[in-house]
Image (cartoon, rainbow, N blue to C red; front, top):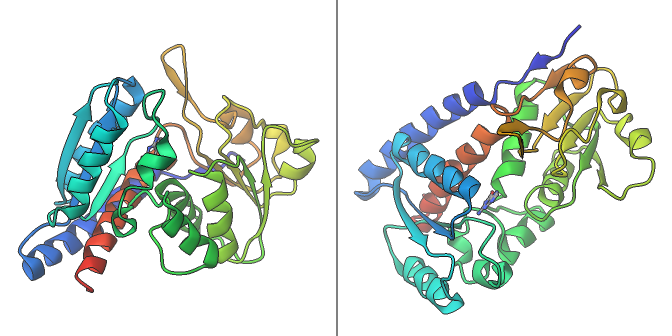
Length: 284
Ligand code: GUN
């Protein structure tokens, strides 16, 4: 039997409707909308599409947004100056610097300048540290979206063996921590893991977040697993996940498609974090 497809677009729409309702309440209470600033530096085509989608999503959810498109030769001090201005802007609750930054600019240094309360990406040492310690935090958006997609299947994460293939700061590591918070037994693998299939075949929940086209094949998946594909690999004008969908769909019970799985939830969690940051600023 083929797996049930987890419809990220539909789940995201339901969340966004709830966020829009909460934004409306925020507007009534505070006389302004929650606000997000998005900074894009350079001409990376994929980044430009992501930023456009983020701004459109804000509009639909009644979240105020401001976009800053800076040239590829922007200096570190210009970027820092903009971030300092946005840190002080009372209309702005969340600041997102789209990655990757142009070559020669140290992303860690730029991200560290964002006020932790406005770090809606959850990439700062403060927010990542809060997540690590299991406290209240703005969790990174893609991992948070993955958790909601897993929950949407109705399976209980508690006690399940979750295998995350990928160890990035943006997805693999924070997702492992979120899965631990949900009482999963977590294994983190990566491109250099020896005998990867022996480990992935143990996974009740398997996440592909390694950034390699169709890296995970059906014969690496345990029958009945929940498979979450974070990969966005462009090849010959088409998008591919980190999971080979055709073979995986025959083994999994639930699987996310690419596109239409994790992607829409990432932006949704960004909206949720912006609202959360706005409410925290007003102690709501
Ligand atoms: N580039 C790819 N994914 C992300 C993300 O989640 N946030 C930011 N800021 N940049 C990205």
